Length: 376
Image (cartoon, rainbow, N blue to C red; front, side):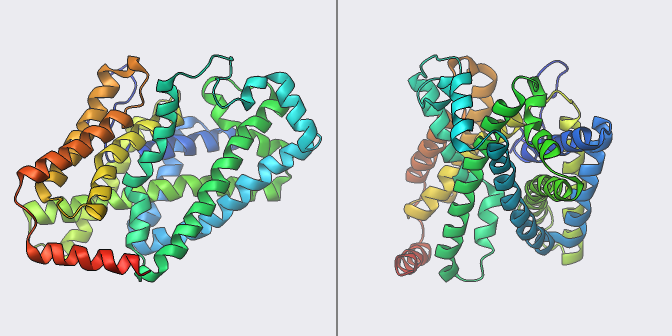
């Protein structure tokens, strides 16, 4: 795993497996407090990090899950009400559509960019490849792993899909409504504050405060989940498994909390540049997680021949490919998750075949789980 990376002056942050998404959350928090309250960017970062670390540090998995539920409800409300209000501020759906179409008809074309240039096959594949990242996101998968009964999986799947469809659709709508109402007033990194600016334009203090809370909730939800997953991996998969197999519960809790603080500090260092684009940080981390763990999750579920050596090879080669591709082959225009996902899948397949077949008890457990899932 890439636990550290070089952050050279004048260059973009490279792929860091554990805390790039946490850093992007801190950047979003810094931009939130800076935009809404006018606080200096770095002070805003410290406030965001302090809030997230505090309840992750003290409450652990239960605190993160419970706050995620409440934050999710707020986010669902906010991501709908802001663009819908914007549409009616623009004169209604038909009028808003006409204004946007008159501004740039290319916004409504699936196969051209905003300038009218036809998207290449490379661009289309790269855009579609974002979907591959979902299979390897630990902060998403850990929620399904925490379900008390397999019978609840179908319901959880429906809830997750409804959330994704609504949130992504209205998130895009926020950007389009912003173009209609704000024009070109937001440029560069400030374009990522469009949701906050629209909120300040539309609502009085009370409702605006609730929506700001929803924005902060979105930041806290992802950041705390990442911190929790990282702390768990370091304390159990690394510290206990490799260094202190007989470590007691109190010792593991101490290591876990220390990990939260260290990862938060690393994330703050990455997020300290106010010119960071949130989307760039998220895209890099999304590719890293997706290519490292996505193929392994799929192979583990659907191919009983998968072995431990294949799993290790898939994680290593998937993550390495993303790192190398981003640094040396970005000029190709291919999103790094594409080669990373392919190489990881090939590594799992090849190294598993070179390894001994899984033992009979493992195959038996696989078959039993497969049969149980089919009966759900």
